[in-house]
Length: 395
Image 1 (cartoon, rainbow, N blue to C red):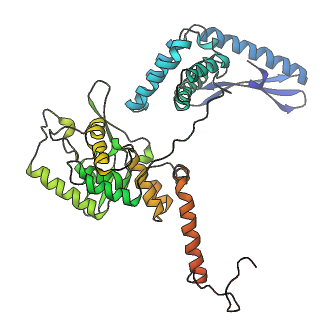
Image 2: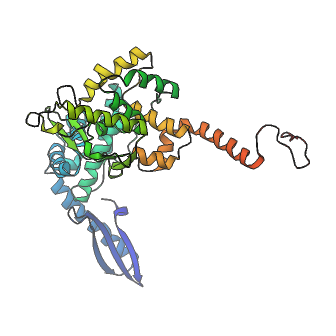
């Protein structure tokens, strides 16, 4: 443990406060410190600090040396399992099992150094894994080590200062207005026409709109409440879960024609019920179900319905998730406030929304400049200067 992990604070002449951080209490989250008043010269205070750091560090080294990384990760995963959604937990577990445990799992927790971690990431890159996968593994391992530091099991986080491959943002593929019209022309007559209408007009995530229930629709106000997600678990069971983040729970205003489609679907399902509450209790009150009354499997939706529609319509081969991007891009293009679009998408902030959809900014700026010019000068054609003559912009 280096001296930088402790402080010497002057109290008065020849009196010093020695302060050494001891991490956070895992229950209260309160940060703990070792504090001691030392009398004497600054040099004596520095010697005391060095001895105490070595003493505390040796204690942590002894405790941390008793546990391998594999054992620690098992303990860490157990503590976070109830605080994150099942999909996220499975992702953490998978990243650690595939990329971290095989190389570092047998090493003692305190023996792992930054160079060891850097080597794992370089091996992943050499195997052709994407920068996003490497950064994902790093994010999980870093979170685990930071918790170990708070639990006073290690002295320093070995993921600190690691060099990661740069993620190149994937070029976003979205429909234009005309392509969206074509998509709806071919999609609306199908059994999932209303689902695709909701997807391309609200910008919901697939897991959000397949988890919608009729109780989430307010016909009088014309809104839908996004409250949950629905997905198929690793063992084939259907699981309701929380939205991606707290801000993802939101209220979205529906377009009138989409409300009309939902009303028609509700009437049809009432007249022709297919859901068996005993066989598929998860599907009770769901808006979108299969012809057999089961929840909609996203993979089946993509390959049996979405992709064939794109092929028949002669449209670009985009992802189902890109309907969310299409909804956002269209809204920004026609001048909807980024703040409103951000709230509709459930983003953390309008700044994040503009960063994701930066390709729309040039169009928005052109449109804004034209509108301000028209407001100041009247029509942009035939603008006159103060003397009544034509304006020469390059004079």
